[in-house]
Image 1 (cartoon, rainbow, N blue to C red):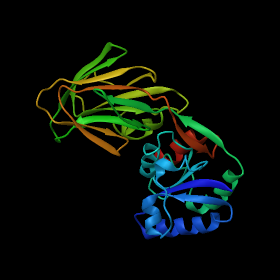
Image 2: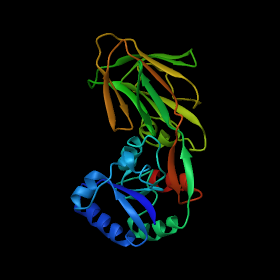
Image 3: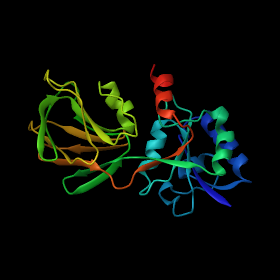
Length: 273
């Protein structure tokens, strides 16, 4: 019997009722490995997300919004393909509406294509932080207190500026925080990294798109200013002036179950118009 993983936002009765309905439907078709929090809520046996690949899951169903998808991917060292069911708001990483979910999942169980998306590898000094599917944000810890940034791309100086923060986004993440900060929307087939200053105090500071394999170094230049690094909105770490951040393309991509041929442009039109 096939095995599939299931993760959910599990923060509302509507989501949990949908999870129960889906699990009941799938019982005769596949073994369902349910994440620990969701399993506890619906009184089922749970499986840590990090162990779902080892337990034989072929893909993961994510029920919620983009945050649920990003949390699930971040917990897997070698991410399984994710099929997103949208029970959030905009949902750029979740393609399927609940009304179509059972039909789509039944089709996927018969076979599916995988779409790979580049992630960002993040190293803080000598420590590797979780890879980013959407973005890495280096931002002031105190609102209205700017930071100084010095950014290098492949050892060449790119920017020296004061700003509230800087977003380093994948093509996948270009339609998230980076877009809201004035960055370009990038087709996920373009393997690049978007660099977007947040409220820069410099007229010439503009967004950049650099090759994904570039080595990006970020240094803080204003002493005694508190800052944080945030990865995909899920992982946060305080940083200080003598910390050095290295960002480059991760070795292992994120993976998604392909459900539409022209999904990106269709989503831009329907969700961001």
